[in-house]
Length: 153
Image (cartoon, rainbow, N blue to C red; front, side):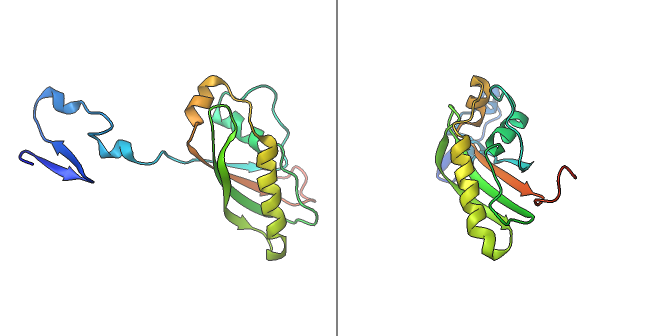
């Protein structure tokens, strides 16, 4: 293509005119990338906040509020990756991407984490937050300090 180049099958024209600064999703390969993952860590157990979530900081505790420690669980951490729909329901099946727990307790921790996400969804979201998080990957890390840690940091 004269005066341009090809990137990932897309033809891009080079021009010095003011129109060159304008683009749409088909002209800009960076727009075609996957959305950034929303990441958070929540120390569990946590109490469920009241009302619908209107910020990300308000969303994460709502998603972790249904989590309960499996019996005989010491300190543990687990990360679940999932996406929500605009109405706060799960989109697809969550995946576990990380665990820090003794091997004999892993299956119980995974089962409880997946069950807790099912119990806590659909999450109550405001329309604005629902639109902002819809379809975006969320990596939520649950950190359990152990049964005897109380409210220690």
